[in-house]
Image (cartoon, rainbow, N blue to C red; front, side, top):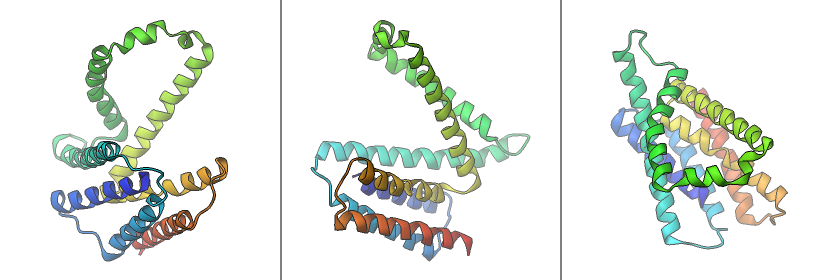
Length: 206
């Protein structure tokens, strides 16, 4: 399911970049995306069940995430015209991004009374909880920073395609850690995903 939705996300990004930024991808990039779709379909065949509402929510997530990436890149381009330095660095982008999400997060916390649960739960009294929570926050900050840098240096389509390639090591790790039998569909999914990554890298290098 995740692989299929990742391909939907890539398609939304590529089409959005075509119409918003007037950026045309070469034939090799579209071929790499097609290989990723084959990989996704091969992996999606092994889904244990199909839930229409679950897929609907995930499709909405893909569309909104793609819109976020495209909007973020557009803001980066607008910043070149509006700031004295000609651009917003990654630290400024991460700071602004988190500040903008803070009011919405506070609203949801108050709406669902999550603060009452947090204040009364016993786990917050454990020192290890604060160690793990702090490490999680720092890792999230690192992910935000590297994502902003990568998007600034490349583009939404490259960002989405490279991001989707992380499904390959995750699939392999899942097969090994959870003793999942290696079916023909899973094997084709991994192989086509690897071919897509190699093909995309060559398309961008040459």
